[in-house]
Each structure stands twice: as C-alpha cells, then as structure tokens.
Image (cartoon, rainbow, N blue to C red; front, side):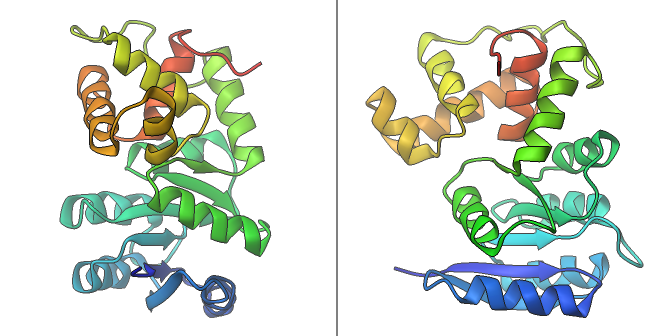
Length: 219
C-alpha cells in the first residue's frame, strides 16, 4: 500500500526535524518535503501533491491561515493538519474555517501526531483533547460566531443525519460506512451533501455547526 505522503510547513527547523523523525518512524508515512514558511509551503504542496500538510500557524511571509486557503484552492485533495503552540478559539476557528481537517498542539505525544495524520488521511477530524474541549465549550455557550438559523435547504435526510451522528463521534469514512451499512463512496456523498446544505467546507465545521444548532451534544 502506498504510504501517506506528508509535507511539513513550519518556520522552526528543529520542529521540522522532530516531526520528520516522529512521522518517519511509522511504516505507513513518508515525509516528502519541508518548508520554512507559508509561501514556500504552498509552492511545495502544489509541486508534491501530498496527502497531508502539517501546517504551523505563525510563520514569516505567509501565516498558516492564509497558506491553508491557498492550499485548499490549489490542491483541494490535500488535507491540512494544523500543529501549533496556539490553542485559543480566535486562533483555532480561522484555521478550521480555512479548511483544516485537524488541529493539534505542539506538546502532543509523537504517537498522537502519527494517529492524527492517519485519521485525517482516512477522512476523519483530528483534534487534541484540549482543542476539542474549547470548541465544544464555545459551540455550546455561543462564543462561536455563527447564527442559530440554518440556511435554507438545511434539512438532512435520514441517512445524512445518521452520518452526522457518526461524524460527531469522530469516526472515519470506513467506520461510518460499516456503522450505517453503506459504501465509503456513499458516506462521502452524504458528507458533501451536508456541507452544501449547511454552507460549510469541512467536517470539523459540520460538527461545530451541529453543536451550535443543538443537533448534537458533547456532555
């Protein structure tokens, strides 16, 4: 099986080196390139077409949020996993809205970083425990800047609702497919339909939107 191809974008050379060592310790992951800033990172992603981009938030020339927007536009199949020292809501939400599929803090254990890469590659969201807690609190207390009103055409079909419930549990496409007795391609279709109806662009945004609208709870 082809390894998961990763590009690391971080302005700290020691961090890039550590991440490479951690990731290449896994047999199914290959680091194909590194970049020291957002501009170089976007160019490398366009050149290498990786599966996963590990992306820092604050970098010279171009920060992580702008780089994420550029990567999503240029290479939409590349999934973005933010890895940073910043864990505040005003840093998390812009990155997720830019299209990141996961958000980790740099104090994460190597095994957690490897697991997150695998999760994001499998189509699931990957959030560290601290980030999940902050997002859930923000969603349930109204700190997330979004309206309680769903867009026109927001209503989900029964199968889309089942898919939503599985997304809220952090399940991958394969796990959702087994749970609702459908193919992975059907699951992808349901997820895409939810995104279109709710006018969001990532699975993480689906979960935030569902929590804010009271459709799912994380007690």
